[in-house]
Length: 81
Image (spheres, rainbow, N blue to C red):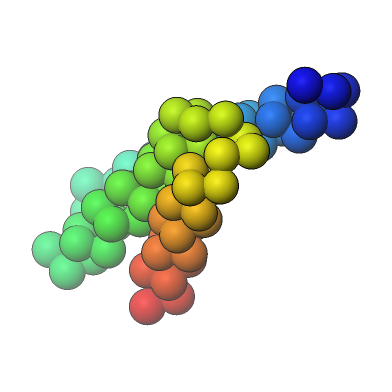
């Protein structure tokens, strides 16, 4: 793996993990209604799936990137709703 791919891999691993950690921190409050809890739980699952799917496969494995990208879009959609 050349330096550019290594730098990208490191950056994406860090960024996807930070995304999951930030979502966990933002959704920590226990004062949510049951309806909001449904959305909160979906965002948590989506954000952690992005990080997990990215870390599970090499960066250049298209199927893992597509799966991580789909979870990313799902999290964004849930936040917009």
